[in-house]
Length: 193
Image (cartoon, rainbow, N blue to C red; front, side, top):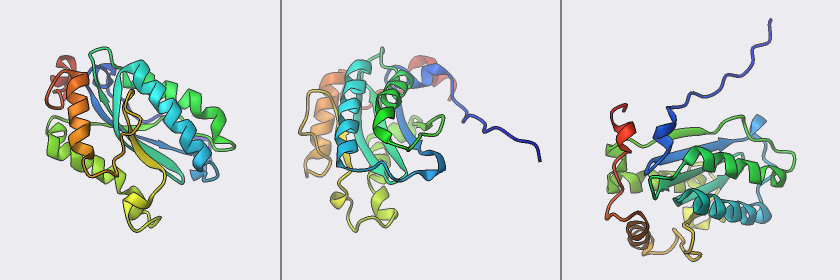
């Protein structure tokens, strides 16, 4: 049987990841490697996530690190935001911290459509990401999972475990993005969806 190389996951055109895009990213390990997740990696992940968000003007309302993959949601805060560049930055600066684990060639992404970006639907999508450890049988309540959080540069105490999290998140997001709601898809991307 001839060798068949892995194919790359399909990507939308670049503008879907730029500007005020909202994207759910999943980074999976080759051969589902599981020997990398610990408190030290989590601290490094948060550090690099902070720099990626600051450099590329992104807010991360939720991320969760699972034993063989991680999920994160990013929202662009400005027209200059670029999630593909931020993803490359994140992966590059975490590579040495992964030990023997190797990430698959490309992350999977889901660019949120207009209806998925409505506040209630968006929060439901983030809660779905946040609940991964419970669905995976790793803990009884998502609040007990030590490897999850949110990140916006300048707000080190932002924690999805707090009661007023979403109220605080939207207030910060509104201030940074200059709007009271999740912005619509970029004008360039709207016609293609």
